[in-house]
Length: 143
Figure 1: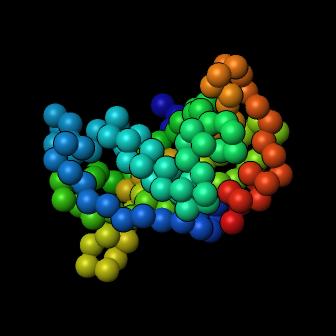
Figure 2: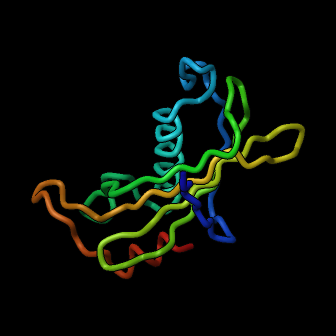
């Protein structure tokens, strides 16, 4: 069976730290797929806020997720301390990709647990249609 492979950018310009909560665990005793997406959403929202935006407030529009890829490298367990690094790349007329690197922090060492990518599009929720990115949005999210 072929596996996906996410090639992460060399540099990330934002990160947050979090603890894995018991509510993030699934019946297997580790972080579930749905919880990973929720953790990434929290990191994405904080990344956007650091740029002066929010998921539903990018200029006068919002963002909508077009796709998601997750590559698991190590289990995440209750009370793990993690760092989620985020960066935006691959901009085109309608959207861009957000890349995520989830690291377990243990005694000062960082171990890769998850690589992920979400395809984000600028979206007019009132008109229910995609909208073109502006140069200002690209500039703000690139740094």
